[in-house]
Length: 313
Image (cartoon, rainbow, N blue to C red):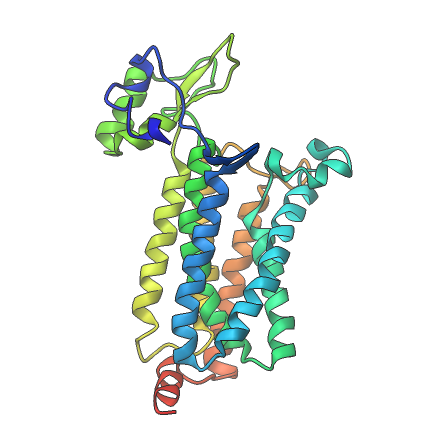
């Protein structure tokens, strides 16, 4: 990771010795530990820490939270892979390739769907209030996704199109103009711009261009949602369970628009419909319906009332 600190003074396209950041954090013998994995685990630990703190205030047993994470996290990871495989089978090609996670191919929506189903089953088994569990999951998802997107940064993936448009063979803007947009218009720091200079050719025939850092756009969007959750969950209008509806709507609105910029979208067959955008629309609708039922039909306790009840016990 030393080259993250060095070689960022010159614009990458002007540096004859340019190379992207290594995506390996460190080695243990022949085993390589990737930054992507580290960022995901950092996000999980952040979510767990916050969940344990808030869980005590909601009266949820600490051991149940830890046990739930141990059970649900692996299932969610499997869900991310299966979702990707289901909508990208033409490129997977074989049963054996399904398990080649090191080659890439995870989709967050699959992880979310499996996590929600697993949470429902687990809370039924443990006799935990499902809505309290949802209130713990929502901020956890947002902070985990905020950090996890930085793993995409080091892998030079989940990025957008070429700055200014065009193709990798014939971009609309020169490298100087692309760099100027990221540096002066977006005012991105040099260390981010450095890894957005991506080769879509080969070592012998490089095709470098600067690409939109959609990983950053989504990370900042998720971080904003996380901060909003920290604020509104102490407000008196909030009911137990509302936070999962907020997550469904907030994350999905951001993902829907950012997906227009992505170059690695999964599609529903040959329809031209991006599965992430269709899923986002369904999640927004689900969030709105959930809020309606939670406030008009179920009328769950207000969040602050649950906090008060457990504060006096």
